[in-house]
Amino acid sequence: MVSVTRIPVLAGNWKMFKTLPETVAYLQEFKILVQYAEGCEIVIAAPFPALAAAADTVRGSRIRIAAQSLHWETEGAFTGEVSAAMLASAGCSDVIIGHSERRQLFGETDETVNRRLLAALAAGLRPIVCVGETLDQREANETKDVLLSQIDGAFASLTSDSASPIIVAYEPVWAIGTGRTATPEIAEEAHRILRGRIREILGAVTADNVRILYGGSVKPANIQSLMSKPEIDGALVGGASLDPVSMAAIIHYQS
Ligand code: PEP
Image (cartoon, helix red, strand yellow):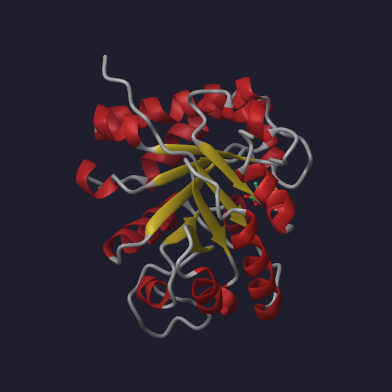
């Protein structure tokens, strides 16, 4: 058996927080705090108006800048939307797709997740695709079915070549912003289900290499136990990423 090393990814999702000056001030402090962090990738997903300034502020550092969504069309009469090329030209390298808040509040479906995913890949952006079950679905023993159908929907018509940059984030909806973290064992089980399906759809090489992040009330106090599970390849962090010191502590979880 070939052993695979997956470089951990620690990503912050700021959601609808931080103005442009707040973004620049955060990143000026943060890039110093994480300048010696090695052995992981660091991503910050800032709001649209601050993306270009964010990318300028971190230039020359290892911090990658992500958007929190995109539209699948390249351009057109889609008021309020932004395209993959616009994000890339603003200095983004990554984009979050299908966050549960987009699914629950803005009508995102597996089909639109797939369209956004294909558009991101076509423009050279690295997608961070979010999946996860609600509390009702978990209590009804539907977690596995929900995760499988979200992966099937998101990955429709992908080939293993085109899929290689994709990152998946397992974010149980009941753990997001609630302070209720999934246990490392619950997260690991979900990650196994997801990787198994990716293996069936896209083959062993892609499945072994895809990074699957856990998201849901990750904090400096729980990151180490989550990262102790070989199936957990990093974290997507909401609330705790809003403070540069706390996000830096998450990134330095090994020290
Ligand atoms: C998120 O927004 O993706 C998230 C996981 O939020 P929190 O860490 O606040 O639960």
